[in-house]
Amino acid sequence: MVIYGRKDEGFAFLERDGAQLMLDEIGKGRTWMYPNAPLERPLGRGVNLQIRVATIAPLLEAIATHNIPLFLPVEEKWYRRGNDEIGQRQFIVADPDGYLLRFYEQIGVRKYSIEYLKPCNHFLVIKHLFFRSDR
Image (cartoon, rainbow, N blue to C red; front, side):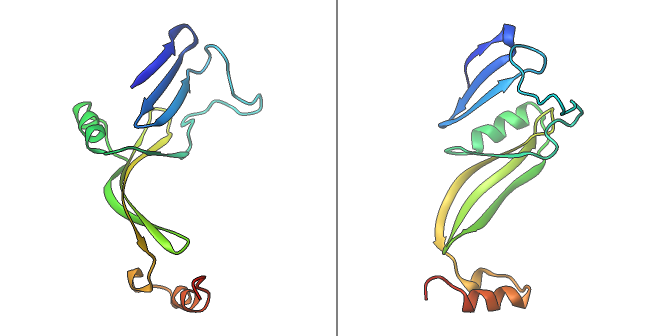
C-alpha cells in the first residue's frame, strides 16, 4: 500500500505488514547513484530483497490478477540459523529493473537435526557430528 508519495520527485513510500520500502524514480528529485556507476539494465542485477508479510496469499492473488510471472514459484523452505531451522513459504518476483523481491511468511521454527539432511556430502555429516555447539 502506498503510504505517501511525491509525484514531482518520482518518490513513493510503501508499507505492507510492517515492511517498509522507499522508491525513487531515476532522474527525478534526489539521486542516490554513484557518479561512476553507469545506469545499465537490469539495474538490480540480481539484488534479492526479502520481505516478511503475515501471509503471502493476497500478494499471490494480486500478482496473478496482473499476470506478473513468478521468478521463483511458491515453495516451502527451511533455513538453518544456529541450532534451529526457520521455515518459510516464499516466492520471488522480479521488478521491472531486475530487483528480486522475495516475499515470505514464516511457518515455524524447529530444532536443527542431522536427520533433516538429505543424502549429501559426507563432510557435512562429519562437521555436524563433531562441531555442534550444543555439546
